[in-house]
Length: 114
Image (tube, rainbow, N blue to C red; front, side, top):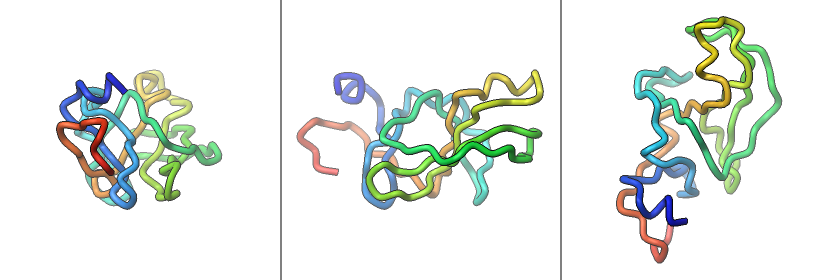
């Protein structure tokens, strides 16, 4: 909880406000999701992962799992479990969250209700 309080903002599920990721964990804001702009995060929390599948993405073939909010079940993006191209290996274990599926809550305080 202390890590969350010190961050510039917490990204939450747009539907239920479940905390999903910290602003400080953004690696890149230059990603594209299925429906537009997306962010690449080093970590995500309060999520469930779907089954792994090989998917042809803009940057090539990857093994991915869709990720869902652990509270409401909303699909939020995906995680890379394997990159087949050596230049894409940095994505393994990272999370792509679609911008229209997450909202930022600034200045989190433990007594805030989400």
